[in-house]
Structure formats: structure tokens, C-alpha cells
Length: 329
Image (cartoon, rainbow, N blue to C red; front, side, top):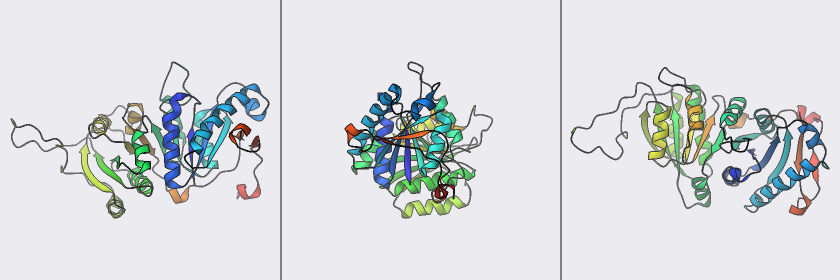
């Protein structure tokens, strides 16, 4: 399998690039570093290696790829033409990817950052999307000198099973610690026995939880057998998840995309968390995601793999070709 990282070719993408490289190293995946040219006539740029704009983008993406290869992973720099929310999911399916990694504002116009495009990519993709704000925890975890802290938002939805399954997939890299947050608008916490006493440091721990789908119990047991240290709590809404993530210094928040929108919530939980400046990153997991059932698709559109000679890539590049019988199968 592989990991796709969408890059803006700017310094704001450094954290996402490093996070994608760390995960590729731990999971043994190839990293596809992709830049999408979303401009008028972009198809002509990607189709012509002698175009000045292609040369400029090619040099920059090869420079990013060369830096990541020093970690000992396989990196394939690629240029695509079209819309980000169309091309990244298509390329991820083409390369049998298990994950798409993004910076908080992919493809943003300079001076006008927005997470709207990241939301559109997550809505279009059939695999998990990792939005990275700060990769420090992931990088320390990859080096083996840190226990990654992951929060999983759960509810009465099929996606909750997929979210725990993704955590089990991540756990195969290195051990981690998990906080399972059961999202319920009917959340009720125990009151302190003494109203004048100072509240404990973690008043939510040990509170009664709402049982999710029955299948989650088996997954929870599987995670414990894998060595995941699990703590459980209940929260009311997306804002409570966000506050808890900051309070507990969570490195990754994993949330299923189908957590229902209830009356107190202005939007779905994962969209709210995508907009929130969390300390680490957010993973949005589709409800039907199963790693073993990620399939390739036929080659369509315009895609060019870049291999710059000055970075030791050998040939100049290999262009996307018409689908072969094996691809169509």
C-alpha cells in the first residue's frame, strides 16, 4: 500500500510532509508526494516537460522529495492538473493508498488561508484524511522515544468501527495510548462529592459511558491485545472534543465522518475539528473504510511522475500512460 501527501510546494506544507514520511517509514509504504496545478491550462503544463511552469514545479517538488528520501523511504514526486478535491482522491485510488495527508490549508491562495478545500477533499475521498497542524508528536513517536497520544471520537455509527480499525492499523507501527471519547449530547458527568472541594485533575475519567455498537467491544479488546493503553470518557459535542484534546495534549484526533449531526451541533463533528487549530492533527475516517479492501482504479486524467536528474532520480520523468489490461482488471 502507499500514502499520498498533497503538497503546496511551500513552507506551510513542511509539517504535513514530515508526518507523511514518518508514517510511510513505520508502515513500510511508498510515499506519493503530489502537487495539483489548479490553473487555467494546467493540463498543457503537466503534459509538456519543457514548459517553464512544469520545470519550476518539478524542481521544487523534487527538492522536497529528496529531503524526505534521506529518511530511507521511497518517495515518488508527481504533478497533476485539475481540482485538488478531484485529483487527490483519484490519485490515492490509483496508487492503492491507505491515507491522504494534508496541510491545514491545501492549495490556499497566499494570504487567504481556508480549510474549505480540505473539507471538500475529505468529502470526496473513500480513505482516511489526515490534516496535520503540528507533526512533532508523530516524529518523536516514529523515532521511538515517545508514546503517541490518540483520541478516538466514537458514537452510534458504523464509522466508529472504522475509526477503531484505523487506530489498530496505526498501532502496528509502534505502541500508542488511546483515549476513547464517546460523543453524546445527553452526556452527564458525575458531580464532585464536595461542592467546596477542588475538582480532580481529570473529572471525566471513570464516568459512565453510552455503549456504542456491539462490534466495538471486540475491537477494543483487540487494541488492548495489541498493547494499546485505553482510557474512556464521554463528551457532549465537537467543542468538548476539541477542549479535551488540548487539555490532554493529544497528538492525533481520529473521528468517523458519519457521527450524526444533532440539534446542539452546528455541523458534523469532523468538519468542526478540521476547522479547529488542534495541537497535533485530525484523521477523518469514512464509515466503509477497510484497509484490506482498498482497490486501485483505472488511470484517467493527466498525471506526471517527476524524476529530476539533479536529485539522482535517473530519467527525467515517466508520464502517465493509457490503462493496461492489468490496470483495467
